Image (cartoon, rainbow, N blue to C red; front, side):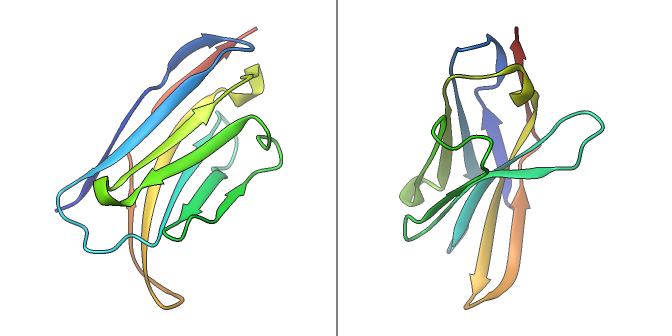
Length: 120
C-alpha cells in the first residue's frame, strides 16, 4: 500500500515563502513523474508544477519565476519551493506521483492535500 504524506502548508503573508514536501510511504518501484496541483474554493484543480524522473520541469504560467519544483527519486520525495506568494496562491495543494509503462499511465497516487493561505 502506498500513501503520499504532505507537509509544509500554512499561513503566510503576501511576499513570503513556503516549502512543501511530499513523500511516499511504502514501496514504489518506479516513479516517472511527480507533480503539485492546487484547488481553490469553487475552482477546478490545476497543475502547478511537475517534474519527470529525468529532471524535466513544467510550470503553470501563473507561478513561473516564483515556484520551483524539485525531486529526490531515491527518497521518493518531491518538493515545492514557493516564493513571492500572492493571495491568489491560496488553495489546497496536492502532490501526485505517476508511474508509466512507456507512455501509458499505469499507476497514480495522490496526497491528501495541504492548505496554503496567503494573506494580503
